[in-house]
Image 1 (cartoon, rainbow, N blue to C red):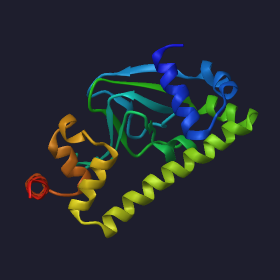
Image 2: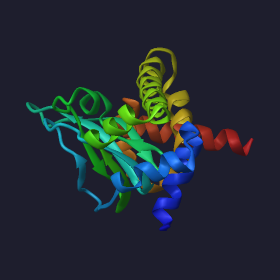
Image 3: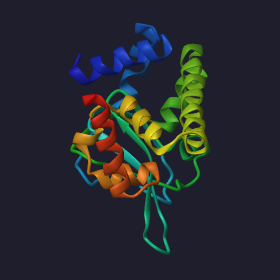
Image 4: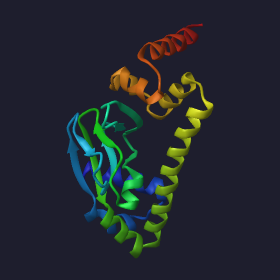
Length: 199
């Protein structure tokens, strides 16, 4: 078993308590893919046909306004997280977002068709599908609630909880876009948090 397959097996066991037989049944469906920094896992206006597990790297999901070309970062996905435009994946309708690699990255992915075949044949994979849907619903609701109820600083701390070394890995303006603030505001937040740690 390759290192990527081992990472996948461990993740699937932990995520949905899949058995070795369940995982073996799916093995031929999963394919490795390298995505260079700046390249895309999926493009705006295209159907997102694949569900990927990030083995190495970090991705941003962002919306690009066709009229202004302004970009807004919505989510980041890094190692040991699934990367997908979930609404597009389950509805098989065009995606509203780009999914871009922010570093040279590697994923192991499964197609919509293959995954649905597993759902139909195997109850444990059906449970995986339910857990996957619950996970992405929770991501979306958490994102909305953070904007409604959290300060910019609290949102930044939540981001660091989920992606501990993201500040070292991607340019600050991408984090500012995700938080809905300016770069100077982000600098002030980081300085305040650093000062608090020193006292």
